[in-house]
Image (cartoon, rainbow, N blue to C red; front, top):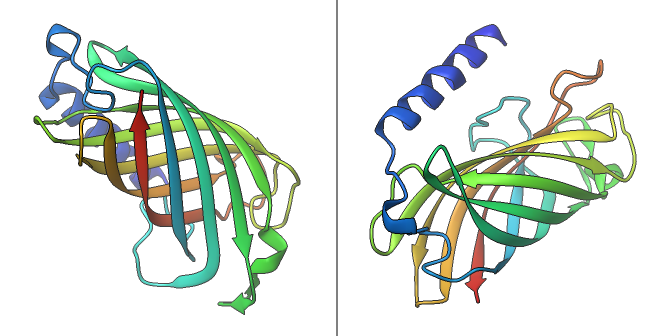
Length: 190
């Protein structure tokens, strides 16, 4: 775990040092608009790692609705979001009964765009929230989120995003597996 923390710290310093600043207030998430809604869908992965390898897909999905507004983080373009997440499990695989983890969550998050162009952007995000019930996989109602992704603007108001999403209890409880997803979503700015 200590090695993973060093990797994340080094990656964060690299992104901050080489990232684009928000020139003239430009925010690639919004393209001049002040509000955004997103609809995301993710496929579950059986992994406890912060950056899960996409090797053990499981019968566990995520539906996720997000409302965002523009902000900055150390002069880099960002978005702050309220997220309503519903996980949907069905069946058993790799020793876990995934139907037990059909749980709603509410999460506050911030995504930061480090590199972007006219129609594309990359982002990393952190979040904190609550799930409706504690279980043996996470061990806490308190959840922390980490997200990596990339987006491409289809129209002035619409973009498509690909992402990796990780939720865990951040080592605040004995059980510290995670929910991990690979997915895609669509955003609409207005």
